[in-house]
Length: 72
Image (tube, rainbow, N blue to C red; front, side, top):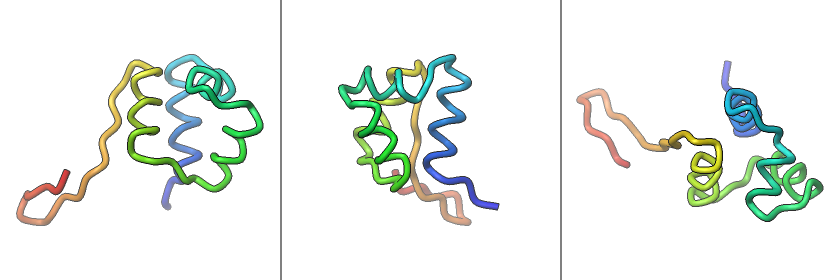
């Protein structure tokens, strides 16, 4: 089963002890805008990294090949 970007962000917010609305506000987004963006799941790499910074964690996005090589 695949987890969506929305589910990942909601889960991370829960672990960080903040609401998605609070995360959006800290990013300069209205509640309506963060909700709309979560529905589409379209966030730039930089936005996801900023979310991680706000939540006090790290965001990683990369490809891992069977031989162990990574494209980060």
